[in-house]
Image: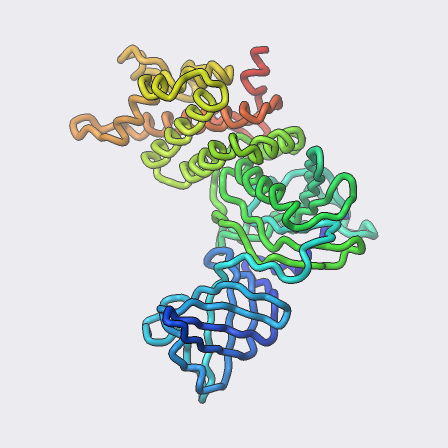
Length: 449
């Protein structure tokens, strides 16, 4: 049966209500003075304009307009359920007070949470459920919608395991409609529910599971080529009852067209990659290289071609240093600094067993100019990158040349990350144009073996 979220999921871009009842907002100034606002309020998970935890509290106490609710104060939000979290108050036109007057004596205060508070007991857990926002892998294996089998089944389940943990990732049954609405309006939607359990079925804490949750964020983001939201981690006991909840969400990017290495109709490719990816991203030595490289790779696809190419090249530099100097000791630090970007990349691709030649179908403009200047694909990539970063007013690069260099750089980044993870399956090549849904090819180091 399909997983159910720990919270009643809203439709489309509606707000998810987390708490309704008494709230306290404590303001503390730098000189130690305090003011308290207490009243009825609510805490909500908002999808617009971006995913965030929002709160509001109102009161008819005229003394609430105290000194504390000013821009120079620190704020703390408290609830009767045990929450105590740092809060942010948005800037408003009235800089003397952040409170808004209503009718009569009614006043209201609102803002966002800047902490990631945990409510309840985060130990002795048997399962954690988290919600994914904007995960772009809707096709999975078959899962039944309801326990009695009504309304049939749909292809929405992914199951990923490593040596210690099992993750079941279920798409919401109405995912297609949510994606259409999110793409056209809010840009954000709850797309999947994830169940996290230990393989040995022993109890665990939220802290124990945090490395797996962190790896899930980077893994799903790498699949989607956008930052996927991980929200509202909820710990359950052995009877499936909620013991704790963390009111938080990671940074999430809005839906939009992105090209990724992952061919969306090939869910079987993800299961063998997950344990290898998690092992690498959890290793401190690789974490320092993979995390910035992944963020650059993702951000490079949300920018204009010129800035995207520069970011892709920086991601290549990050991976090159990590592999050639730190991991494999191919080069000393001094030797690394003495050789060019193209030669560093050449050594990296030799290590990864990734071909370095032109693809006439994917890079016709690069190949044509490269033959004219007697430069190979790596030298042309460096040449275009340098002229994008340091433009020549007398010789403007055409858009096709910059686009091909940008896509080639992203292709290198994708494959090097897959190689670092020891991946041996198929992938979707962005150099294949046009690339249709489901088009796959073996990774080069397996194809050549």
